[in-house]
Image 1 (cartoon, rainbow, N blue to C red):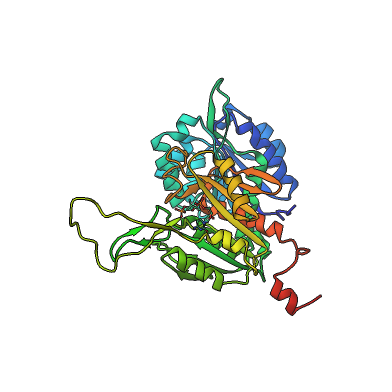
Image 2: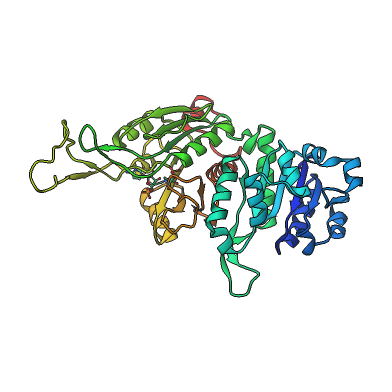
Length: 425
Ligand code: PMT
C-alpha cells in the first residue's frame, strides 16, 4: 500500500446519492497520508453536510464562491493551485456539462476553470442520462481536454427498478485511480517496476492487398495498442511497437515499426524476440487474398470478381508456442456477443497467459464505439479468474494493465531467459 506522503487532493463533491460513498474515500485518503480539502457543492449539501465532511478532513469545507472569509483566507485561485490533483466525485451530468463547456458560476466550476492541475472525475448518474447524446458529447470533450474518468460502473440504481451503466465507481476503485495519477505525477507510473524488461506490443489493423489499390481491413485505430506501448515505456520497459497502418504518432520512447500485412507483422514480432512481455492488441485480419492481383482489377464482365481467401498466420498463437516465448503473453479478444465465453475459449485456444476481452458490438455502450473510439470497457481474464473493469479511457486501460503486469513481475519472478543465462545468480 503506497503512502500518499502529504500529496494534496482537492475533492469536489457533487450532488448525487453516491456522495455518501465519498466520505469513505476521504477516510481512506487520510489513512494513506493524503491532505484532503473539500468543496461541497450546493447540490452535494442535499446529500451530506459540511459538518460530516469537515469531521473527516479536519479542514474547513468550502461551499460558496462569494464567501468573504474564504476569499480573504484562501481564494478560489489558490484553492485550485494548492492541490496536486483535483477529484470530482460524484461527477453529475450537470457538472460534466459545465466542465465541457467551460461554465463557471459556482465555486466548484470556477476552481476547475482556474486550475492547471490534473483532474479525475468519477461520473454517477441515471443510465439514461449517461447514454444521452449530450452527455456522450460532453464526456468526449472532457477526454479530449485531458480529463481522466473512472467509471461509471454497471449496476442497480438508487431509483427502484432501474439498472444499467451509471453507478459511481466504488471508493477503492477511485482510490486506485488516484494512486495511479499521483504516481504518474512523480514520473514513476507503476513505479518503473518494468525497468530492465523488454516488451513487444502489436497495434492497429492489418491491410491485406486485393490489388495495388484495394485491400481488406478493419476499423482498428491503434489507440488502445499505442496507449499500452506508451504506458509500458513509462513504467520503464524497453518497448517495440509493431503497428499496422494507423494515423497516430509513434509514442515517445518506443521503437515503432510500421507493417502492413499479417505476414509482415508476424515477421517483425519474431525478429523483436527475446522479450519478457507481449501484448497483442492488433486487430489482425484473419484472412488474406490468396493471390493479390498485380494490376488494378477492372469491372469487366457482369459478375463481380471472386476473392479466394487464405487463412493468415495467427501471430498470438505462434508467439505463445514459440521456443523463445515471452514469459507473459497477453492477447485481446474483440467480441460482439458471448464476450466472456468466447474470450475464455480464445485464452485456451491461443495458449496465452491473460486475455483482455472487449465488447466491440454496436451496442457496447462505449461512446464512439470501441474500435476507433477513445474509451474501452474490458474484462481481464487470467488463471485466477475474470476481473471486470468499468468504462475508462484507453490510456487508463493501458495504465491499469501495466500496473497488473508490474505486479506480476515482482522481483522474485524469473528474468528473461537470455538475461538469466548471461547473469546466473
Ligand atoms: O485499435 P483501437 O481502435 O484502439 O481498438 C482496439 C481494439 C478493439 C482493436 C483492441 O482492443 C482489440 O480488441 N484487439 C484485438 C482485436 C482482434 O483481432 O481480436 P480477435 O479476437 O480477432 O483476436 C484475438 C487475439 O489474437 C488478439 O490478441 C489478436 O491480436 C490476435 N490475433 C488474431 C488473429 C491473427 N491472425 N493473429 C493474431 O495474433
